[in-house]
Image (cartoon, rainbow, N blue to C red):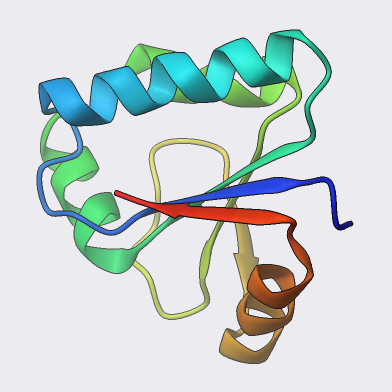
Length: 100
């Protein structure tokens, strides 16, 4: 797992230009076969419920694994729900972690 990149979407403005740039970077890596994971935090998911994004719904089609914490709100995009210990293990095992 050391070659995986974990992107953590922690902000409450998931549709900002910075978030869109990060999605572009994430998708570019995934398109070239880079194992990529997007961790959507509770704040981010709450905002996405207000303004759903078609591009996020397509991430699994590009091989991007989307995860969230077990207590996060129900997502309008396909995400895998993990407990806090599993998320910490995932974070520890990834070769690179980017928080935005």
